Length: 515
Image (cartoon, rainbow, N blue to C red; front, side):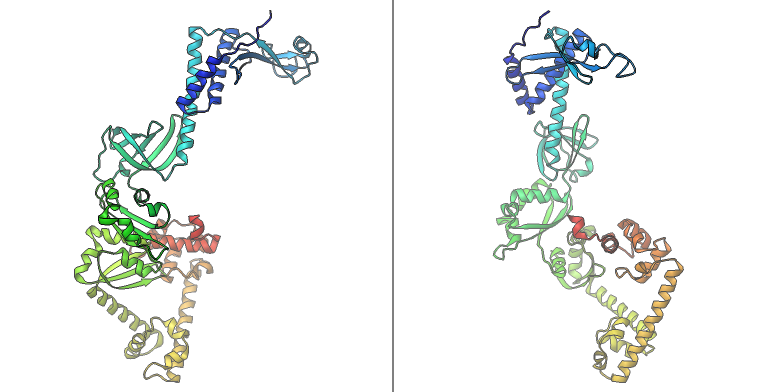
């Protein structure tokens, strides 16, 4: 029975174009879903066991339906069981082809099936399913590249404090209760802005995790309000937040003619006020960034006025000395100001009053005096004289040029030489005892010689199973804090120490990690 030539179906192409535009997906995806739907209808009419495909001409809309056969040598070859609905022997295939070969695929043209009510419903389900999958794929591709961007949407519902947001009809965002600013309670129908924190692909579409508490949310808000930040003329170096309460943001500019703090705040606060409003009245301190850590820390501790600062780059700590009436400002309510300054700068900051600083210095002098008396076998007067002249450790006495010791009032070449000899002998003794203790714990020399931890800390780590520099490098910062004790080691300092160990063991430094 002859089969009519496929008829043009321009109406089908128009419908496909309309659906593609409405769902913002590719026309080809719509046509492919229609082809799958037609093939399903054809199978329902001609037999589910048949291998049937359908094709739609992209120019005319004509539908072509075919059943396919694989050519095999004979009925006993090609599989465990001969399938007459999908396989033909070479002899059988000659009905369709002049010179069939084993492995060929024979195409048998079928008439276009009629679209009855049931067939139409079946086809509709196929098309809807495929189009929905394509929509979800497009949504994921769109949002996965938007991580770190601010989006706006309308609150759809609130469940147990968690907020579900319709993002302009393109996807559904999810804000956990912990990612909302303190005391804010969005209600259905309200507009809300948030930062895309993560996007994950799921069977029901992309899951878009949003946040309003992340420091980057505030950074992106400033980029929207301050053109110089958006253009890169002013750079945001760091942001620290106690969401809904207080925040600090460090800015800088390489153009000396620009006041980055003033331009970020704006005339009478016109630029910073929209950010404050969006963050539920969060107080924001805009401070000037500096490459000099002492200057940076002093700026970060504002509004308190600093009298003196002592930084220790080895441990990344800073002692900030303020007047008695400034101590409460420097520390802040419940320690918030100093905590934010520490987060902003990356330094561990201690706030001391003048009296506490004097007490601390007196304690240091007493400890150093006792050390010099013991190590150098001298009386307390000579020990205090060395401290007064600026000698802070036995190592300095042992290895400074002897002329520096001779310059101390009352010292001559003989006394200077003798003090250096005693200092070196003491250090050799301490070194031997230290190495012996470490080796008794089966610790390796690369860890025992590690410069970024104090020796008592290294031995304590060894007593807790850290036997090599590799063991130290493989720790997490909270594990090192747990080993040494929170009073002995801050987590921010622990992280830097572990990075130094990884740099030596694996060649990994902080710059590479950031990259």
